[in-house]
Image (cartoon, rainbow, N blue to C red; front, side, top):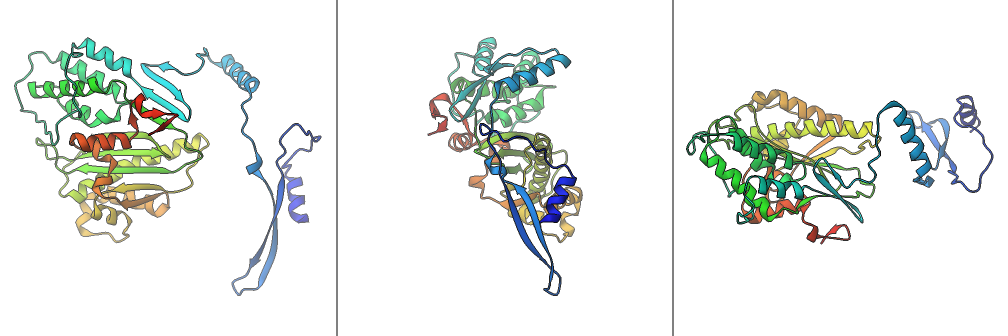
Length: 374
């Protein structure tokens, strides 16, 4: 104990100050441990003095915040906009346990701008199993409006993950859109007509720092190239924080290969998110759990034996295996019915689509009561 205490003193671990009963005092505690040699005999006795950090209280000092802002203002041109309510076309509504983000005004403006506000609403962006091709329908005489509509929809995906796949699909024909593609775009707006007030719910995680990802692929879904589509959804605690839908750069020769490429695609983003959270002072201690609905791909990710049949996905194989071996990734199988990333890889039935949309916490104000989903 004396050795430990003297080491703390010599390292100037603390500064002695007068006791102030008005302040929260964090206590300390001695931790004792016996170290043993390989033969079981006692090597030495260790003592460590540790702070009882669990007694710390989070504060909300307005003067301290004001002082910090004044220091920033000396270095940068700043303007205090007050509490967040509306920014870059996104409405931020505070509820009792979180934040509700929506772009309902933006959606309404788009519907009137493109003269689509009188369309009859529908329950899903595109019909189930929709496949759009480069040669479907006749070429549009003027592609300007099509490109303008799709570009506007791309910005909407910031708070509407439910239209991400549909927008990804119609975005592939910007260079030479056809009548079938324009029909698909108008159908997306019909869906938005009935869900104008929907948005993304972000709730307090209550200290939860778990990172969970869902990865999926639609094997050979593109009728023109035979390429597959990767999609993923990443949650921090209960909140969806990252999602994407993207056509794979090469043709996959099996569903396992397509799913495994989607896993690697997802892992790239989880690594980035973990890095950002670490820089912000919220390190993720537990490994990221990634759910995949392909048994073979899940097994391939955790099996250290390299198979000859997987050599054509060699880079992705070693990339994922490295993260698993490093201890910051676990790949688990999940049934297709529970695969939340399904909504980012294919067109679904209205029933299936609505179920996944709700699980992603894309809700309407009517579904909120007291900050929670009923």
